[in-house]
Every structure is written in structure tokens, then in C-alpha cells.
Image (cartoon, rainbow, N blue to C red; front, side, top):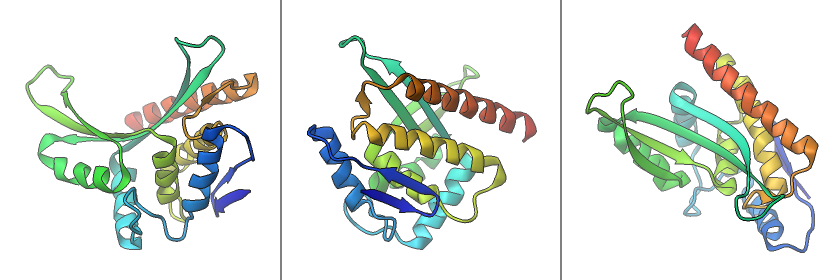
Length: 195
């Protein structure tokens, strides 16, 4: 079975394991038209557009993998979408959490002051898939277009391993996740230098 919108495709294969059945169910229910929030309510095109605009201005996408400390030979893929704002703007991030899931955390500014940042992070495969669908579309700012394309590929790799995103990654999958991670870091540094 293949689920896709114009810019993002997830191939779901039949498997005996529960995570893969869950991934198949997710792919069947996470249809791009309409995109549903975590509560099952449809996300309006207006809300989706506002989220996209906000995320393209303030958001960060990351992808990497790490070795399991409990089971040798098992790797876990980690994908994450996040936004950090001054704590007085936390209401916006609370709305994202309410509709898209994830967690909120309070962090101190890196300059050593007492000021704080509220950060929204979303890292489950199901929620990242939903966010990937929201970030798709015909008009992606140039600066973010390559980041979104790379991140969507990482989401696909994780979805292929089931909702948990853990399993035995083939050497070429590990290599590709490393390349995606390095490319996302390089693009973030490029954006920081040019803006």
C-alpha cells in the first residue's frame, strides 16, 4: 500500500509485527485530504497555512539515529520538529501541542540570563508524519525547501520500521540517515550565516 500527497510518499508493507500494522493503520488514517489533528478533528486549510508560515519562520527539523543501549544491533531513528519562542509567546506553542501533539519544555537562554524559552518538540512517527503532510505543498520558501525534503525522507525511513521507528537498519539506511542529519545541520548553519 502506498499513501502519498504530491510531495511525500510512504510505502507500507504487510508484516507480522505490531509496529508495522500500526504504521499501516496510521498511513490509512493520515490521508492528506483532510489532515486530522491528534484529536481526530480536521485541520482547516487556514490553520494549516498559518502553521506552515509560522514553522517556516521559526521551526527546526532534525533527524538522526542512535544505537540501543538495551539491545545490541538495534538502532533507533529519531526525527523531530521543534519551535522555540520567548516564554511570553507560549500560547502559540500550546495550540500546536493541543492540535499536533508533542511536548513543551522551558529552557534558559544560552546567554546565561534568567530569561526563558518555551520549546515545542514533536518526535513520534505518527505526529511527524502529520507535520510532514502539513509542511508539504506548492510554496515552500527556498531556504526551507531542501530541509523539508530531507526531513520527509527521514520520516519515510522511520515509518518503514513501524511507528516506534526502531529495528535493524540496513547499512545503507544508517548511512542515509547520517547524510540527512549532516545535511540538515549544514543547512541550519547556512541559514544562520545568511540571515
